[in-house]
Length: 508
Image (tube, rainbow, N blue to C red):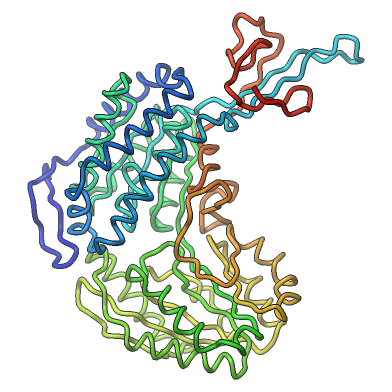
């Protein structure tokens, strides 16, 4: 195959002009250009890189309606959702421009020499430097915010790393438009063209070639557990292994505590289905699991949620392959001896999927790890627990998650306090009296979690801490002032960037 085309999510039919299928030669060329650009790009000032990110944001906005319409056709997502996602994409770039200007990400540290101490301490100074060229894989469910100019690209560019993106094959037109916008920002900023590269094609071999290229120093990925683990395996098998920051699999448990259920079980049931069916359930933070203790409030929740699921209209899913996988996953649950189907909406067709709600007991849930497998789409299991002991047991038996949610009233706080240490061990974000769908891009956000939610629980793919994935520390011992990095010299003027000098935090 030398060409491929966009496929309309709503019909499964190809449309538009064909795109070139890139192969090993194009990957090698993009990686070579990224390596050639690295030293020039990493030497740019904080301000120059901040302006560059803002130019990318402006170029994306300048694409206007053409970008939204392409993404609508290729993903099946509605206009309002994609306009909001475009705003988030732009906002991420602008956030990292602010991060760059603050200078905190450099983690500047100076421990002056102590020649009279026994043993003497040498002069030691530290800063964070970029890793090198980074490979980024576009995601299927966020064609803008987690793709070509998404959070991985924004944070890697902010760190000073050139980026080579493998565009997601489900939205080549969207990816090409955004790639063009980034290329224009690169040129307008006077940067080497290799600061950003974009390769496209439908084969897994293309991604494998990118991860295996010796010039790539790290990988950002959002997708399935199988895809993420395949990339981790390739990266670890290299002569020089590299980190893969993969966001993979999460079913995001929601815990309905007794007093909250008693007070508003019916309302919680309706609101839960609103979160479950948002975007056809194709959010990585979709609430695929509900834990609750038996009681009248739980019955009201189940009744309301079942009714809402039965009334839910089928929605276009991202690709026919994702729709087929959703059908296989829900069929497997429906046929499971320990699982009861509570409600199912209109099943849709080969491109549209409906919502499905299941139920099991805590005992059965703990007995079969398969019930923890993610079904990507609007599917969820209610796990009925006999008491607090069973509730704690099912939480303890969970795999790692992106999120865990507590619905609680004031009288539930003692129980929530006892559960919190368990939830901290299982999830990257614990939230109360809300729904996990929706991830704010800010400084305190963590979008990560223990395996298999991510391949590295120490990191986040959303928020300002995402930059840390693409940096590493270097310590300079007894170097002359004239050859130290400027920001570590005694007379440095760092435009407000903090420095930790002999253990005391200073600004400037």
